[in-house]
Amino acid sequence: MAEYRLDCLGEACPVPLLKTQKKLAGLNVGDMLIVEIDHSCAMKNVPEWARKEGHNVEIEETGDGEWEIYIEKVK
Amino acid sequence: MKLEENRYFKAVVKDAWPYTVGAVLLALLNITLFIANGSPWGVTTPFVYWAAWIHETLVGPVRDWVYFNNPTHLKALDLTFFTHGGSLMNLGIIIGALFTSLAASQFKIRKIKSFRQVIAAIVGGLLMGYGTRIAFGCNIGAFFSGVASFSLHGWVYTIFIFAGAWIGSKLLVKFFM
Image 1 (cartoon, rainbow over the protein chains, first blue to last red):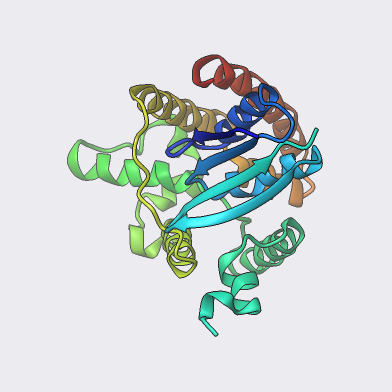
Image 2 (image 1 turned 180 degrees about the horizontal axis):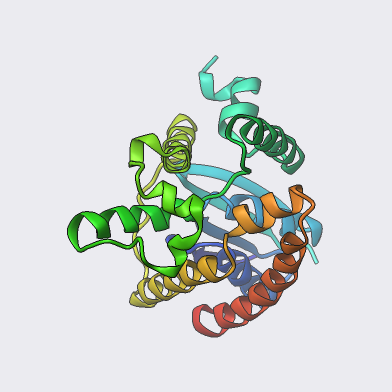
């Protein structure tokens, strides 16, 4: 049940999604990955991909134009 | 209740609109523009005019260049930023996008993460600019307006934009991952 952070601030699409996919592949089931983004299209494609994969996803707006995507690895 | 929690404010101002809504709006606006302007939407040709106006003001005439043999381009040389519809539309896109991100409280000046990003942006910008001139348009002028006009060039452009995107994504993974 470890918690990991992935800093994608300043990265444009599709880099945040690619980094998330790579990072999540190396985690254990039950781990939580928090992806920090400031590119609004990543707020759409990262959660979309993670939900399609069956993970639990929550988005939090942490500031003007900044978000944290919480992804709990389910399988 | 706070404005940000209002259902309608969230759907219209804060969240991204569904792709289908965007597609329908773009189609309707492009038809309106075509009726009003006589030509479909384009973005990159005004950039050439901006450069040509600057060149004519500071350096010298461009009228004898092959590109300006085209009567539409030649006529545009006598216009100015504020009398040329395409230039004003580009300004409108920037102002509209700024307003949208401000209204949603999502405006942020993003920091540059690496020198690599700077190089990629400059090289990418130059390639795109060069590409739009030899293809006579960008995603908008060549693809969006081309396909909407039932012109073959829009579909040819589509095939090659996929090839370009495939190469681009390989380079992206190689240099940014």
